[in-house]
Amino acid sequence: MSAPDPLGQVFSALADPSRRHVMDYLAARGTATATELTGELPITRQAVAKHLATLAGAGLVSSERQGRETHYRLTVVGLEWDQRLGALQSHLERRRS
Amino acid sequence: MVRREIVLPVTREELWEALTEPERLEDWFANEVDVDLRPGGAASFRWSNGEERHATVTTVDPEERLAFDWDDDGRVEFTLADDADGTRLTVVETAPAWTTALDLQAFAFAHVGA
Image (cartoon, rainbow over all chains, first blue to last red; front, side, top):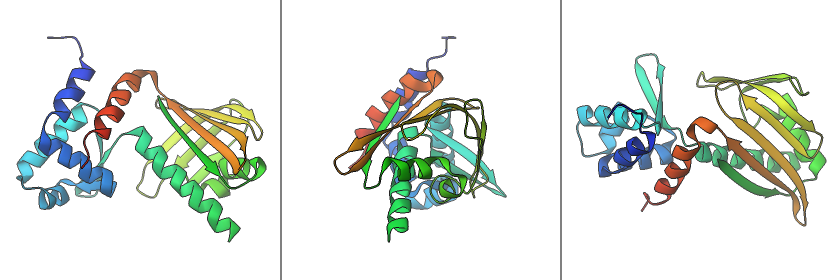
C-alpha cells in the first residue's frame, strides 16, 4: 500500500464513534482544544490527541497553534459557508433596523 | 464542490455592496479586508484568530457575478439573481484537490448527528 488513498482515510477516520463525537463537538463549538475535548468526552487526553491526529490526517480537522494551546476545527467548507451566510444575513438585518 | 443558496430581502445593488465593499465585508466575512475589485486584483482577509487568506479576483460583473481564487486552494463564485423575496445568492466553492473527499465528508457528516 503506497498509493495515497484519501477516501479510505476519510472512511476509517469516520468509522470510530469517539471520532464522530469529536466532530460533533467541533461542529457545535467551532473550535476546541484537546483539553476542552477531554473534558467533554469519556476518553483520555491521549486518546483525544490520537483521534485528532487521525482526523487531521484525513483532512477533516485542521489545527492552529495559539500560545501554548492548539485549537482544532472542522475543515468542512460547507459549514464555513453556512456560518458566513448566516453572518451576511445578520449584517443585512442590522443595516435595515 | 460546496454549493449554498440563500434568499436575502435586499436588492441586488445592496447585496453587491455587502459582497464587495471592504468596510461591509469586515462586518460579516472577516475582520480586516482589502479588495482590489477588478479581474486580476488582489484580495486579502484577516480574522481575529490570526488566520489570514489571500485571493485573486477573477470575475467582476456588477450585481451579477463575483469570483475569486484562493491563493492556497480553491475557487469561490457568487451569483446574484432576482427573487420574489429579494435577491437569491448562490455560493459555489470548488477545489479540485479535495472535491471528492469533501463531497464524501458532507455525506458522511449528514449521517453523523443525533
